[in-house]
Length: 447
Ligand code: ADE
Image 1 (tube, rainbow, N blue to C red):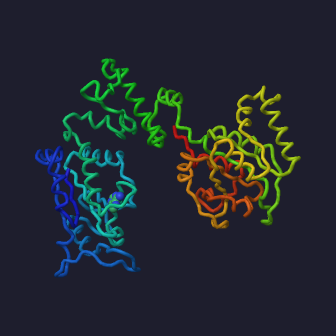
Image 2: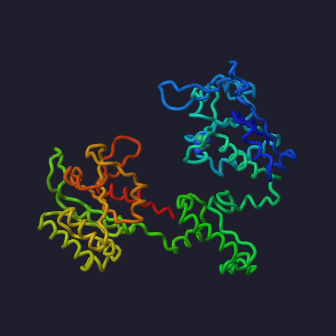
């Protein structure tokens, strides 16, 4: 495989591309590299390659002229697919690069049978003039959600990830197959832990199964160790991985980090808005109580407050709860009884917050919810940040009945969760649906 590397700093690559397995692959001819510096294509005496951004702002932008001339010199044709092979451009805002893309690039090279060329453009400064991408459509690639000084480090990541998948690059072809994220036997999961000599190090013994010679047992232990690593560190990988029925059954049996127990919700019936945006009191409904209790139980919430200042409404709530947690409903439907056991009766938001502080020993963080953006003047807290707060403190999520929480209720909150939206502006969810979706966005138990 040949890499054309378009860079203002060819010297950057001299160390990493000469040592270890890459150095060896260069010697055997499996890999080759050539460097193309846009500075050599600059037209002025000072060999200028950058300019200030139109519209103002800090830093400099790479000029389109020298870069396009460099690409033409490599055989790329503007507004045309013609060229020596895939063209990739590194930038922080590109498509995340992962093992699957590395495998595809290596696979195409292997299948094509003849030496394949990848051309890598390493941006520098604040990026490159956007017209370069219009003229030479490139695959924009990011190696992570962080900002590097330029694409050179990112290019090294890609080169290494792709090269090690080429047949003949590694001594033992299997070492690539079993590693973290490799498709195939590992199924896109993080790698299992590895051990070597000595058997006991600083009082820590190698897991017995690895010394047993029981190959099936070792394979099972490794698979489960990978699944466990995914569950705790990268749960989204466990969700996306190719899981067998045995994997799924085993995952079900593993205790999860249950951050959800620090999450509480309150269904607020006062003060809420009516159709004309006037504050008032809404009536309690059986359906809201049942459905939010079921969602709370499914997501492992610590509790669900049903809040209304009206005594007759609280009496109605007590009747419903008695029927389903201790009466005939509990006998015919024990699952429902379990969900409704989470419901706590209360007059208002302050009562719920005080009750939570009493029972947990910590004042809860109050987070409002609203279908509308920017009405309440509160800071918005992302779902990920709410999830983070749960690690250390109880969070009470407030859901408004009627047409949503009134300003008085929102004023009690430290922040408001983002309005739930899918792909358009229509977001008129029932409060029951909104509660379920919000729990999922915060807790999403992928396993
Ligand atoms: N250039 C700057 N930051 C980058 C990143 N995270 N990935 C790829 N190229 C970059």
